[in-house]
Length: 202
Image 1 (cartoon, rainbow, N blue to C red):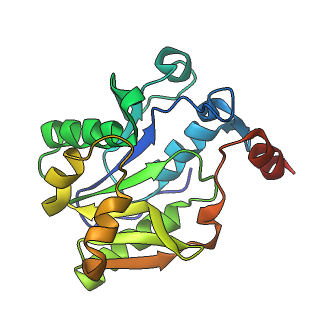
Image 2: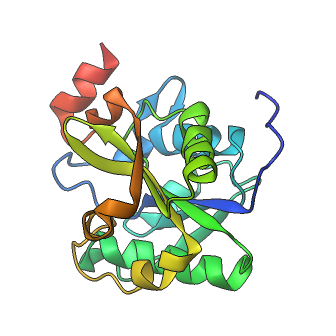
Image 3: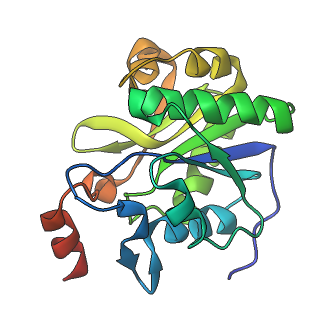
C-alpha cells in the first residue's frame, strides 16, 4: 500500500455500506473486484488517502460482511435502523464520529459501489475544501453533484438529522451557493444490478 501523504487536518471518512442490495439480489459489498471485495476496495482506497479515522457503517448482512473485512485501522459501526433508508446510516456514522473524534473538522461520505473512487480523488476533495473554504465539496458527474462528498463540521447536526431516503444530496441542494465541486466523470458508474456488475467485470 502506498505511503499516505501527511494529513492536513482531522478529516474523517464514513463509508455507507448498510443497504440490502435488493436490486442486485446479493450483498454488493461482497462482490469481487480487483482481487478483493467491493467494500474492502473502498476501505483500502480510504486508508491510502489523507483521511482519518475511516469508519464503515454496516446494517444488512452485517455478520456475513464483517468477517470478510480486514478490520485493521478501521472502525465498524452497526446501523440497526438501516431499513429506514440511507439517512439513518449517515446519522449513525455522524453520531459515532462526534463521540470518538469530536475534533474532526469535516467528513467525507462515501458509498462502496463506486469502484472508480481513488485516494487522489478523496485528497482532492480535501484540497478544494482547504483552498475555497466552502463547507461542502461534492463530486461532479453526469450533470449532478454527489458522493464522495465532503461536509464541514458545521453541517454535522443537519447530517445527523436527515430522515428516510433523504441522503446528503438534500444538503448539497440546500446549500448549493456554498458548495464546491471536483470532476469525477466515472462517478456515475455504480453497482446496483447484475448488469452493472457484468459491465464492470468486462
